[in-house]
Image 1 (spheres, rainbow, N blue to C red):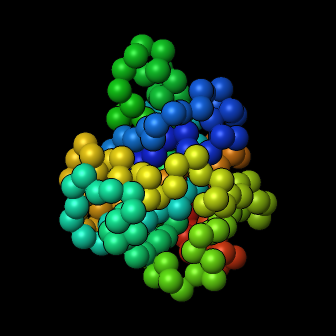
Image 2: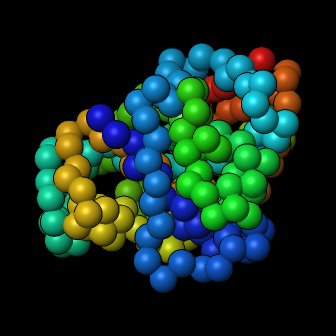
Length: 203
């Protein structure tokens, strides 16, 4: 399986990082070794001094597909969860300045915390999904699926025009504004439609 991550998919987040608004989806990959499951703790790595949290809606691909048209994209997913894209912001900035790829800043071990998945049809309004992140008791991020620049159907169509999507692949759809640093001792809790879905202690 592969982890497809969409960058700069919320206007306010692009603005807070002083990035231009994309005209097409921007995506990168994380390896399966990046997965952090079952609410296990995130251990702060020794190669970075500035790890950021990024809470995201995550869709699970339900069947194989290539060159999927947007109108048929809903046939390729039926489950949703939450993920935290941990980012070594200092390494990412260094890569950007040198025009280098971002893998060391985005694809390191445990950098993709993931919740359990639930059926999309179980949500009260699948077209307007809300989610938020609480750190140490304070809400730091809040987003809605309707605020995404590129919705999941566009993302699936676009990504599948370059690479085959397979059942079990995960699509991180981008993070809203409010990203920030974590430190040892912090506690993160992500909510989907008000329901707690993911916990992560920073150690």
